[in-house]
Length: 260
Image (tube, rainbow, N blue to C red; front, top):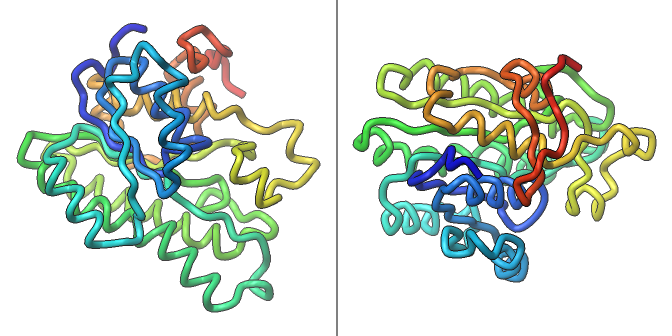
């Protein structure tokens, strides 16, 4: 541990499993105080057992990121934070012909509106304290490119990326960095596994969650503040900054020093 986020107050949504969970552990390992939120109490309860030495730096809170009042209450109780990582999301599997109105509404509610609500609630205190970092979890199925069976998911992630670049332009002069982060390949999280949304052929080249956690960490370090308004593909970004990827216990997991 090098203390890259020492003293930083961070908030991560969908922190109970997958990318969110890995990022909680990576941030805590690097000295951050992490407020980990999720709708699943059991997954939150098990977080502290994975990194005993940093258990006191992880605070958990149940939060439905589609609930405006719950978000407002949390923002009021929490006050200023240095880092907001919006990780909650939903992958709808199917084409436009498979997408009913309720699928469209739920996808945009969770993948876009929830991030708007979180940013709207926590940004004022960030501005008052002089700045901070916002990372929004996106996907390669977005403005980056179109993929089969990702119709509404891709549309919602493209909208999110436009939100990120717009915010970056609006608040860059006030010390706020806003970026979208996406994996370069499928990520085999427990949620993706349970829903069966990752094709069998893509599983062999699936990207480890450690890549996303390390990329989010790199974006939230003090030296990364000039990086803003970008849609960053995790492995490409790590190679760009010549960053080694670390396992959740702090050991070197994989080198990302060369371009993929």
